[in-house]
Image 1 (cartoon, helix red, strand yellow):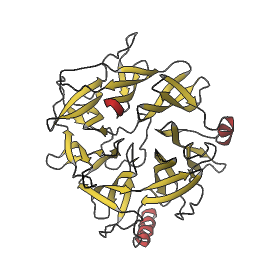
Image 2: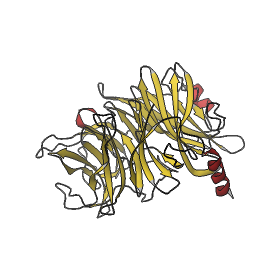
Image 3: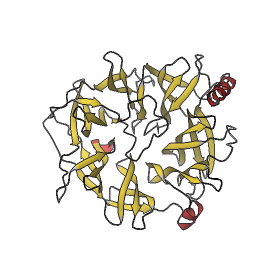
Image 4: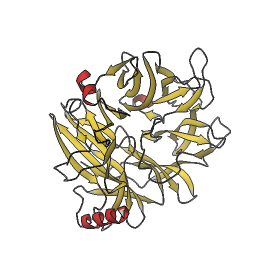
Length: 419
């Protein structure tokens, strides 16, 4: 009955055209990890099925001189050779299913590849079931794959500890990949790895931050411009947001609005989560439980002259600009340009928690405007209707939003929208 009602809602909305023009880049039989866009906005990368081989592949699309994105090509697939390693790949995504729309940001991160200037960083599982993080670099028009760190290998720290688990690495400025890992002693570490320019060169990761009794249990990181933010527990045992400054090498707590914020959200059960960092500002999602036992989701940010104590959006209020009330909101990406903040995020309708849409919050001098980017039931200019839309770990840069769509005819589509 719930599904029938949701379909009815979509049919009623199907005569509504999207407010933004879509550039359809490709159609794939299965999209496994939604696209992330490069920091410079000139490339995007995602995981899907290579229809030529039937294997999982990491696809890349580049911005062309005419302003459109190229047809995606497979840079790496499960048959690719890993230099300096005898084992091959089993898969690039832990949960082998299309459109994992429900829990896009689990404790161990999104496992989404990232790209910058013909370098891809990604996590993967080897054929012997060990997890690892890797990079692919394009040399002489050919992609070559190298390991950065492998589960069970020794970390470059003293005393000796060994890699246990990873958050997918982010490629940032100066060819540096930043990644979160845990050791077999369950301590958290954040490393930077300089991608070598020469084939014969090899460097060890450099430690940026390490858990101790004051900051521990790192969860998820977000990287931009060589700096990062992470979620971690402090000495008081509360989960909070910490920012890293690459100049000072210091990881400091960002207390959202001070004690007044924590009083406001004292019933938080898994907050904050889904942190996003850009230009020394933060956005994150969370949820509280209201007096009736219902989950209330929200996104908070201190960007665009907004204050942490004032939520950008909550799920228990009607959004006047789009006349809907979302049941859940999560997976924000923050971007700032000309003092205006943009936050893309995912949301679901109350009719069906699997019907996922993509939305945009624009914050200008503390004023928030919410608009739909790609939502269930809306019709593309080619006549096809969107059933679901999702975004990856980094979904907006330089006014371009990268996203994956599922259409009513069963197609999975990679597209970009300019805002």
